[in-house]
Image (cartoon, rainbow, N blue to C red; front, side, top):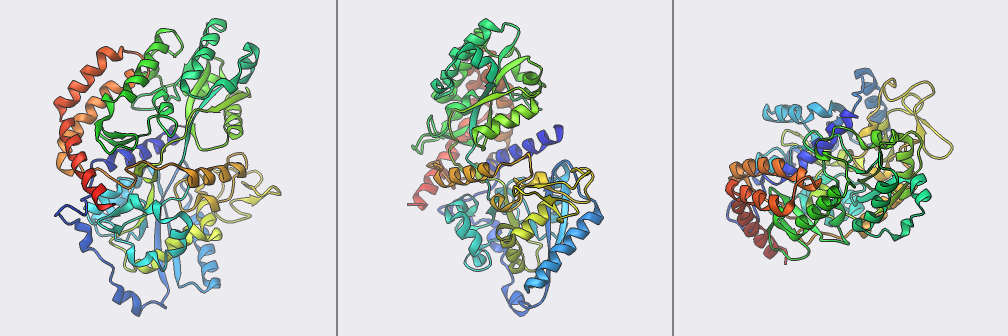
Length: 523
């Protein structure tokens, strides 16, 4: 579980660093340094029929495959590509997610052979430091089917100065904040779950639980965060049925469809979320000292210390309920969606690029395309070899071979399924993913509502000291506010004053300037 938390924190790191890295808007006079990096197409054309081996460097979670197991999978994929008449081959480089950023940065800094990788430390930073190549020459050719698959709209967050530098991981990105609660208690209290339409509608139920089960926490945080917890009340109030906030990072945000940059922590949205949390905390509806708790919600729910939690999922309610039942001592649960997230640039922060060290970018683009469109190649990278690393079941799912698990098979990168390639072509691991969930996520992607600033990234490279100072202030104040532990009427003014002293107004002013230029260029 700690390793799972670490990957969540790694993804959060991607999102935060996106705000302090490098987009120079096309209406600004500065040129993006990476524009100087172009593929040597002359060399490629002369070698177009030669066999080219491309290294795929990908993060793996919890279990790093053995060298022998990786080599067997690599050989299997390459044999398949040879039979298909493809002129590319793969070299697989699975890297422990905890070491991935450092290993990739060190290799790129040393000019070592990195071909395809995931710029976890932020695409804008990778562009600013010339680590990735533009993909424009391949979008209508080697990558045409991938672009068609996800749509050109999804390329906007990785487009800078008219150049596309990455292909986003194609997965379910429209998550939902779910209110998850013990079914037996709800039924005993006779509460109508259909009455819950938004986060505020759960207060009457929490109040009943408090009255009838005084030794149980009515609402607890998801928990386990190294930096601090929130109750996700703010997340549930955001989204398409709420304020529709797009947070660019370090206090800069927009609310709704107006392209006016505001201090996220001084908006009516943030104030209302904190007031709801404070009111509930005063009424005893929230676990005391929730912001500092190291307990996981599943442990608290399974041990009957807690009644409910709000957390984000992309699955259908039935799958969320089954997940919590399996993790919480067999108790049955209700899962009620409270909203749906707005699609922002940060929704697509996990993406794949071709490194500047790649000697044949055209061949690398072909391999990228295979990861999104070729079922055999993709699932071999994720799950390994059929019969050795997994077996197919009659219901269409897969399982580990009898007597083996993820720790004992020669190869698996199963938990990288949300990072590598096209999630919708990946096999469903029995007990993990319901095929209905995949259809649901795909539908949500297609029907998702986009932020008015979708495609915009804040470039704060000239404000790094302000970013660092503001981030320190945010870490100091936000968790206790969002868990209702302090009075927002008293503390938010102190919070905002500290942010202003740290330089947040410089960041907001620069964000507004860049957003205006971005909007003018997208008319």
